[in-house]
Image (cartoon, rainbow, N blue to C red; front, side, top):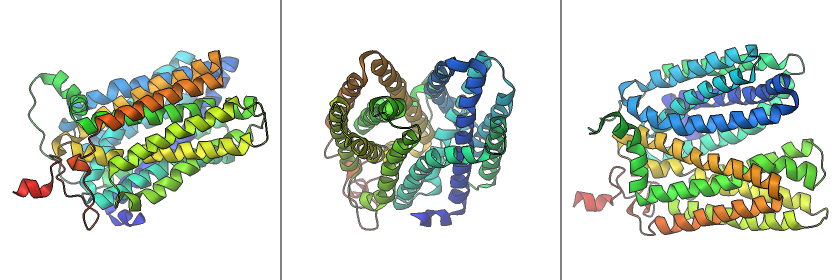
Length: 429
């Protein structure tokens, strides 16, 4: 997997991603403490609103990137986004009103909505061989999972000798370093952009229209919803399960979240070899099926009246949730890469960034509101049914004989063209 780091441009981009992720993790910890200082007991509602603002920014801003992305050099767009994020992080320690937090969070996440799809669209150009690109996707998944484990520990270590406000300076340094690395990377020439009629609206919706036009991309959105249902239950309700339902310590909350990350990382390590032999459709649909089965198991754990077995069962279920989400989400870039012509790739990744976060915008409130008003078992049932319906829809929407999901050919590639999705032999004929 690490062989792709021999590519100098990718190595710099991946390092930029990792540094920015660590900076974001430090900011997440510091933001929680800042919210408590400003709002006291209402800190939870402040953070909940900030999370909703984050998702709204992702859903609203990412499609607009398709309008301007082809007019701005990619390095400039990514580095400029990093500079905006650094400026916001620098301002956060000085706020003293809740509304100021909301404004800055929106600006921060809007910049992220510009950076991430552009970054995702660049990687296939830097690593044009599918085998290398698959390994890059797995590395990115590992980076996200490791950040979720490493950043809180680093923040705790740093706060033994500094105030939490100084953590924001770590975020600033991370984004500045990311910008410098992006600028230093030499990127391949951008593919020619297609001519579009209809002005800015057509440009902003081009990626979304591609998703609703191509069957495998419609299925991909359903799979995103299945993964979001599982992740929302873990993210929102882990603390309730551990502290309230099982009566365990606060440290066990981190342990349970670590089990989710461990399951995801294990699959990310194994997927490159698996995807050399098995089609994306089979891997992703089996991941969605695994999530559905785990929801049923979590329902049993939730309904059980007691017993010491529930704690290891919860850890196993959370690890399985992480594994299932990794099976669904890691190959996503490959599916988009094969489905979008090179000139439309940034718009396609921007549309996916927006539409997939729309799934989170639905499942986060479901996990929180249903769990708080009707109980954990009701939340498991609602999210489980949502995931099951999404998995069934994905199976029906994604053709079993999809040409772009043909069996692997020797060397790890596939006998299809990235632009059309038709078998290469048929195109040559």
